[in-house]
Length: 88
Image 1 (cartoon, rainbow, N blue to C red):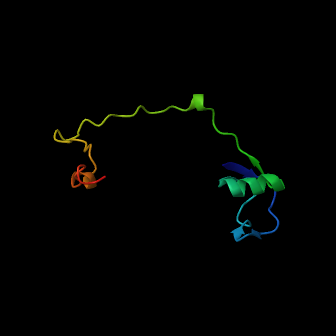
Image 2 (cartoon, rainbow, N blue to C red):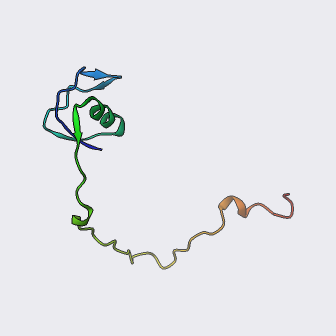
Image 3 (tube, helix red, strand yellow):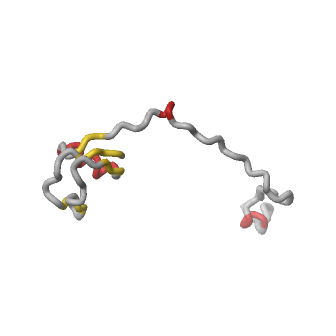
């Protein structure tokens, strides 16, 4: 989650997570736990995601360089050695 720090976090460390490295006014990409802590304590505000309509996505290119002898294996290797008549 992306957050913008609006206030210095107090205390400087919680459950082994150092909080004194976050600077007021800067944006950070943090995990859900740290984001929830900062938002709940009022130390940060969420940064909205960019509008998805504004993103230009590149089309996925199909790879045509596959070798002509490429065949997908349909039977698992361990099943080839098992005779279904002898195993119940």
